[in-house]
Length: 509
Image 1 (cartoon, rainbow, N blue to C red):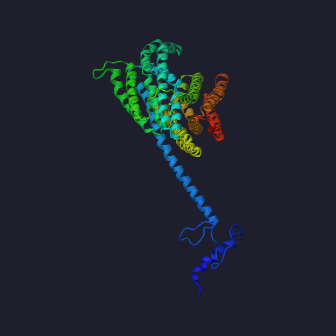
Image 2: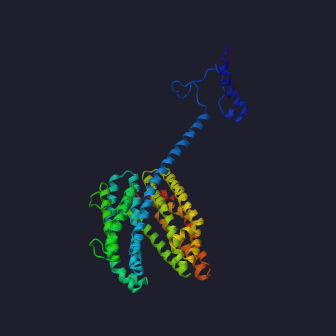
Image 3: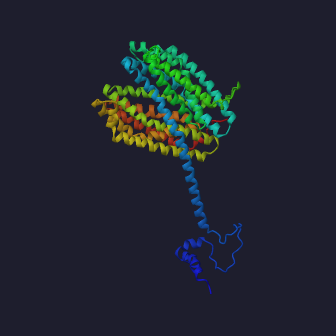
């Protein structure tokens, strides 16, 4: 007698044939249980009694592919966060030192605050000129590290430090020579210049420490280690806060140096930070007197465009600020307070941009272009979430944020308009920052400079000039030019990335 328990198993395939005739036409003919099966082309595993149906095999293969991709994305997400969070903290710490200097000298009066601000402005302009060196260091080291060219990593790091020494010494001489002239050119008052000059002179004396700190941080970040630079900046800030107050006001037997004491404390703290980073990356450095022109050429290829981009950006911001100043002191105060609040959203954006540049650079160096694309989009997604959340905060709670900085009702009212405008541009801003980071990691820095120039000089400044000086419209329209600027930049960088022309750029030779 036939075993009844086997009948349902035999009837199920026949039922599928009647229910899904299209599947039946795609599938091999069903065989009776006693029909001899042909010898399979691929040997079955021992203990297997029935071949897997082609559709089921395809479905399982697709599921395994999805599972593998999900696992890769999860791994990439963890890597992006591991890199981005320390960079975000490091960026916050870099800003903290400048804010702390203004706060500490506040007890000396408004003239001292203005003098410190003027000195910091000149130092910022100087470091902008060589900002391409630190970006070039990050990209070059990342690609060499991804390509597993350990010897070249060491030689590149040594060359980069040599370039940092030349650039910093040149800036030191230039700054000391042009300090007074630049202050007078900016229209600073004589009493401010008298206080700012010794402060700024000492800042330029120790500017090699500032530049070395930036370049060493970029070199170490290029290897995928973003925690060590963060620890260095934590130490620098703690040392600065410990030394600055006694040096400014004269405590514990230390003579009171006034605002110059803030510069002395910064130089000492950053010098100790440089020593720590040099010790941390001592295994990377190679002692060699041989000059590698290919490494110098690669650094110039990346760094020159980045410096040009920063110069065009800062020059445009100066002109844009002058247009806002036409609307009066209250409007300018609202503009400045709003920028201070908005700068908080730049912290995660900058962190994810550095993470994207490092990871994409390493993947391209290893020849893993598909992984580089996955890393870019994951960094964009995370940055978009973070900055969009900040945008919601700016849009719905502007009064709360503005009250932290000022109690002036007029400033708060105008600042609310400003914050709601910048809330709208948070997503285009996040995409622009991370896409720029990914393209820098690929070495495509010239197009980023082009996009920055078009956005700032071709969109923002003309629209602001038409709305402000020419038509005398409300400042709302001048501020809205920022949305157009960042949207155009985002579109240009997105087009460039999707075109995949960055794949043809050769940083390594």
